[in-house]
Image (cartoon, rainbow, N blue to C red; front, side):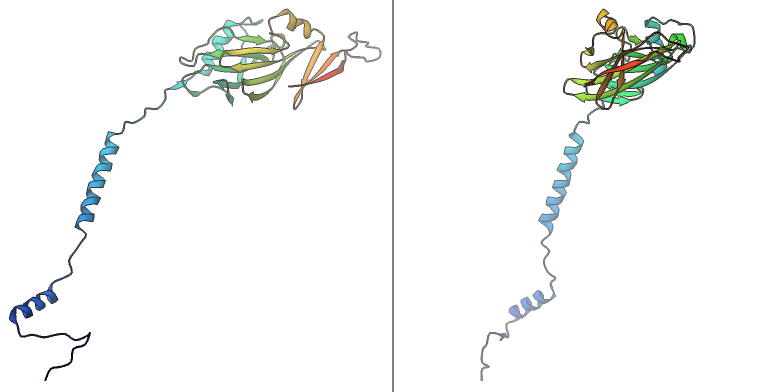
Length: 254
C-alpha cells in the first residue's frame, strides 16, 4: 500500500547513489560567497594607497621674521631727530600688510609677499625731543628691510583710530605737544594700501598746507571722527589766572 503524497512528503528511494548524494549534502557546510567582495576590497585599498603616494605635498609659504629693534633703529637713523644721541624707546602700535590685514603690535612673523606698513610711537627720552612721536614706515615684504624714508611727527602724546575699507586701512591720528604751557597739535587721515602710505586729509605732513592748517587748530579724536578746536586768547593773564584756551569749532566725521 502506498502512502499518500503531500506538500511535506519526502520520497525515500532505495537507490544507493541518491542516498549517498543526500548524505553528502547533509554533511557539507554552507558555501562561502565572500571571495569576490574580499578581492574588491583589496584592490580598492591598493588603488587608494597609490593615489596618496602620488599626491604632491604643497610646500608651506615662506615666513618673514623681522628684527623689531634693528628695524626701529634703522628707521630712527633715517629721520631727523632733535636729540639723536640721547637714549630713547619705541613701541610698535600697528602692523599692516596687503592693504587690508592689520595687527596691533610689532611685526614678528609674516608670510612673505606684500610690503608691510608699521606705525611706531617713539619716546626721545627728553621732553624737547618729544615723548610720544609718531613714526610711519614701510617694510619690504620679501626681505624685511626698510623701504623708503619714514615720516616722523613730533609730539608728546599720540592717539590712533583705524578702520578698514575697500581701498585699504584708514588711520586717523592726533599728535599733541605741550611746551611751557602752550599746546600745538597736528592730526590727519592716512591710508595704507598696496601702494604704501597716502595722506588723505588735510595734506601731507611735510607740506606747507599741512603746517598752515594746524597753525591755530587742535584735533581731538572721537568715536567716529575728530573734534576741531581753534585758538582762543593766547595772552596769559597771571593776575586773573587766565590760560590759553581752545574754542570748539566743528566735528568732522570720517
